[in-house]
Image (cartoon, rainbow, N blue to C red; front, side, top):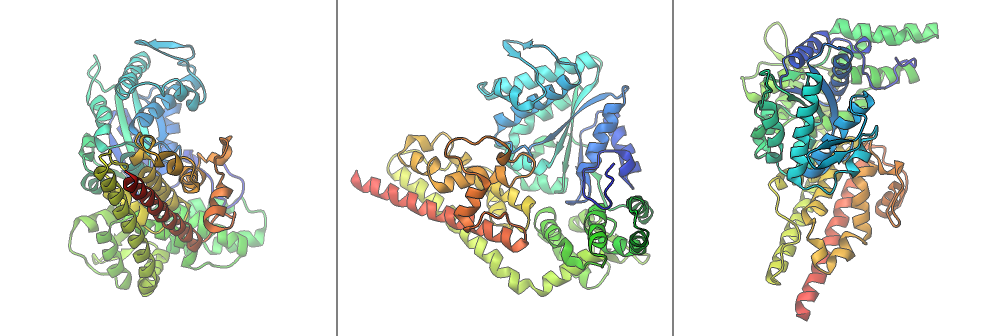
Length: 533
């Protein structure tokens, strides 16, 4: 337990996870039944803390019917179907090794695997395998250890939107996991199951990602919502007990109601933002302290239809006709109803943010329009380059993809914080590198643009240097490879990492402008090459 009051930290134990007892009990029941479930909740509502706590509770129970493996494709920057399946194998073997279950080199068919406590070392043993062999190997390993332990292997997949949009090359690639979760062993039980954890409502993902119905073996979602008033007060009092200054202790306790009403019972907003501000400055903050996270919520975690409802409710609590959007907002705990059935926004700061955003909508529109225009120009130029190569009787450079509309959306969605920029950087990498994979080496521009250009080096580092836990700045770089400072200096003229919402937006804009310039030069070189012919 963290001894510093109101200090943000990962929560992985039941003692620090307030207001989640019933949900934890339900998750443990789902695990006992070897169910496939989606765990849905808005960003910053505590999904990861909940799942990691459930993970530890399952691991501590010797009689559990599942063996859990926590997977975060986004934090570990996994891109590509083969890489995704290799990652699953490597993470599974890593934990089996740490638990002293898989300790010596083992043969799975013709493949010998040496276990390790570092998944990246296991990954190196598998990178030469074909896609089909990797997927078959995963199934062999899961079946072998499921039978050995008499438990189902449970994959807890955090940030599942990233899995479908970026890690897997197409949603059909999930079919292997779906098929394994449908099979049963000799005892008539599942030997494999999965949990998918994210902020996008399950039905919305199914509708927006082509082919994601491959994951339709799941049961009803479990929702992570704000905690109730009593639980919030217990959490607040636990933090206040760490305060030695009696006067400060009394001040913090006096602001308990303020924190609950303004946060709406979301622990991150209430404790880590509002509580930390009160503790540090001894004065009450306004809603702007949550702005980057509310912007993230409004642009990434709710649909346009849901946001229209929120704008109406922010002006005046009232009854709303039943709809999918209304149900999603209630299920996620963003909307609540009073005794008369009128809906209101849970959390006064969120309501104040939406009202302020509506008042300032004219100021925001030019930003959105600027990004939309840039991305549209980029996509048009990519199509033009492909057509130019077709006229030269060469294969296209940028491979068409099924989820291009989803990638475009992530490119043009304004970034106001690091998490939003991580999604943008992943979309940028996939658009620039993954779509041109195995093609850029066949023509002269491949080396000039996709390997040696400053822009390519910026794109290469963006998803690692600004992507969260798996940051490249913690690794030894190749000769000529950019660092985070190199990227920032090249694009912004300053090595300081963005802090404010405006600075993150400006970095995103700089990337897109440089992307367009890179494509213009590429197209010019292609035309000159065509003329020489």
